[in-house]
Length: 440
Image (cartoon, rainbow, N blue to C red; front, side):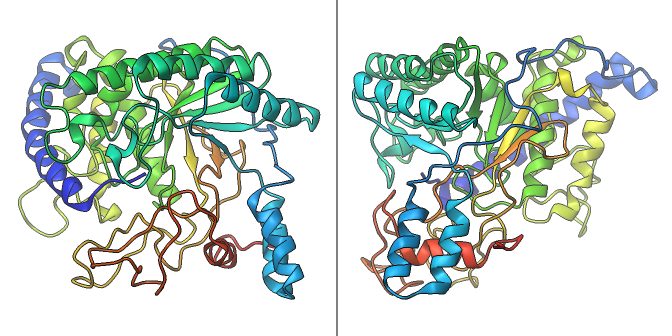
């Protein structure tokens, strides 16, 4: 899974420009609507945007696979006499992680999903599944693949839902599938927009099909806080059927800090409410929402500290201010909830020295990272349904070359395993650097 730095920079510039115009218009309309004169912008008892009943509760126990990669690595380390790393791997093996479903025939995925939920039910736990098979996934890059057609994908998703059945489960739908639409791929991958329209329809089908199962909590992936502007991803969530899901997922396979993701996710939730359940003049206008790149509440006069910067969360109070003014405080039951992948964000993102590499690929096996907050459905935040270990800890992001001629990754001095390949050294590093620290 990937998004290129150059593509992201181009998109940020466009979002800033559109954000200034849209936010100014939103402010003018808001004055006409009267909220600046004191009329409340949000009504606390609005009907819930998502499903009324929720599968996850603070007492939820997520499934621990006793035969996962960390368990096998613990045995290998012990046999090699590496008692310290073996201890870390035993601790990691005791923590729940998601199971990824990335292909196979409908019959295979039905059987594999059914086996997983059976084992979880026998243990009195709730499994977390990742559906990752949408056509054209990852723009054909490191994690390329996916079903051959929309028809094939829909048959596959239906089989996945059949395998889960009516037993408790959490399903995360298509990491990067929404934040990286075909129209976002490099070159002219989708000149007419037809492929992107098909992608949204496929995601909508997946959400609807999975959510028909009464025990399944469904979260549609929405990228992370350093990618799509709030209004952009909010509109994509709406278009992909998020209203029928339990919410959305953030930071899958990424490294952004939990506090920043929580702030970003709250803005996305409020933006969706603003454009769908908010004041009449705001309906359909996610493009008016303040974001991590721009807020009309800031002076934006060019002086330091007077404009929002995605790379400086201390400036995000201007975005908070816009939501306080334009949206207010809808009840948590009226807003979309979300889950956060904390598998590798304990030390935040990697920042190499400027100019070190042509393309540092900061998303790809960054060195020195660590596991983040433990998986739990008791997060203490009314909008955050769970912290989850979604990315399998110890699996490579791909064979990174960081803009060099390759094939060696200059940060490690070796050729990284292909995407999804098990990498013992990476597993050891993430466990040793965990914040909070792994304890016996």
